[in-house]
Image (tube, rainbow, N blue to C red; front, side):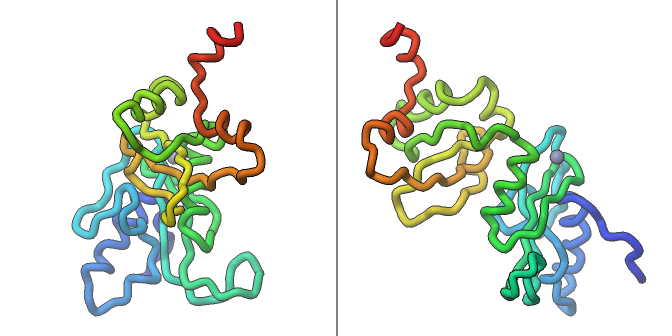
Length: 195
Ligand SMILES: [Zn+2]
């Protein structure tokens, strides 16, 4: 059978990928599918389309010169994608770049959200909810956390509403006053202390 048109979008691609994965006589790595651990990924069941735009990541093996003309060889290609529509982002070398592309599509404005400390203490969730727009977490929106440990990668499913936890590098230690203000925005103080 000849495939006349490629499937498009995360749901269609992963649904088309699965029979190739199940057929152990074929190498399925060169077929686009949802990346392991990212939303919609499963080896047994096709993903369910969502009613709104939800970010995920597609991956396929490549082992060829980079599509960006840099002359490097990329082992894989990644693309940001959406479980709610057929949008796909540009080819990327790294998973995290594709994750960010997907959020530009599904949750525009995420880059302007305050970066918060990594989860700790029982007041952490209340702090996040104060800092982020109403309903943001319920819509599967991401949180941005400052990563001081070795794990810098974006984490799928790690936000309180099931969205991504997007890693932010800690600011340089040259301006501690500014850094504290960036790290711990307490917007409820703005109206009372400075008015
Ligand atoms: Zn979408």
